[in-house]
Length: 253
Image (cartoon, rainbow, N blue to C red; front, side):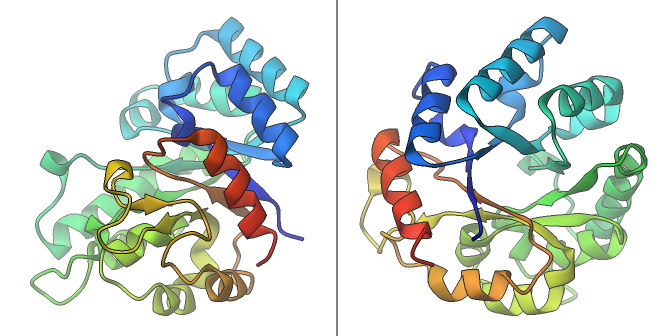
């Protein structure tokens, strides 16, 4: 049975982290995904303390998000974080709006940049890839999309597919899974509320309580190279509810 992980960004507004880890373990989660806001500035002692908290809760952190600045400018620190926390895969999660290219050539070049950045991490034995939002699916003047250009420019890049953002980008997730399944090594599992609902949660929903056809998507994703399925909700108002309801839904897929 596929295990469900938990992106710790989802609980950023519900400290302390150690309590969240305990809740996740008690609810049946075995994995979490880290992000730069947790460990980006940690020294060696703090990283080891975080690892101890994970171990105490019986959790592993096989995947993590790392900002592009850290990946490019402080690779030794990024590698130290990944090693200490026991990661297998490193994903670059975002590009700020003012840094985004405006045409296909620019996005292809960005893919080449990620390809070059990732070499050090791949050589160290890690999966290295890109995590999408919705802007990668906006059609460019030549008819292509940024996501296509990124993956073309970075032929060795893995893809952590955030399916709900694909949907919000008005793209067909099943078509993308069919075309790029071999590149998908991890998946963000989150749901979108029905139109007009959950405005105080930015329109997101707990898994299985929204409109994304996850049962069929999970079936399709199990035919890809995806190894990790990671629950995420960008702005939950009740993290305990999110934790409990989402894993209950996932277990039915």
